[in-house]
Length: 161
Image (cartoon, rainbow, N blue to C red; front, side, top):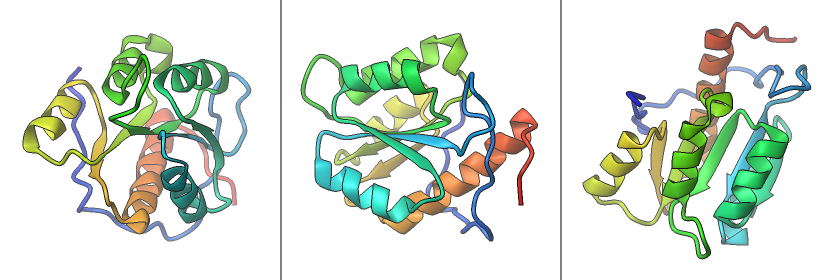
């Protein structure tokens, strides 16, 4: 795919709350973030850290994640790598990248696997970032805000005061 993975250690906190912009077909809504993790504590931690700036939806499996992506068109997905069931996070990432209607969806992988080959595999499949658990929630939030601002600029979306 040629997508460059972000260095998650090079983050800059956002100066102001992220502006709103279209997420998908409806447009003009607060950015939607899909959190996919089979551990409710991880989802809760991220939900609290992200606050009320975003519309947050959750899924606990790869199958549920793909259904939510088709239904909700999130601008960003925080995706656990290892999940039980039919699809793991890397398979979900492959499906996202294979669908032209989701090519601009930003995806960060979350994983307990911190080996270089795991990071490289995610990068080759089109991940925008790879956070190793336990991660800093503040680091994830700063990355999310920065990445969505970049996305808004690239897509020509306007910030609202």
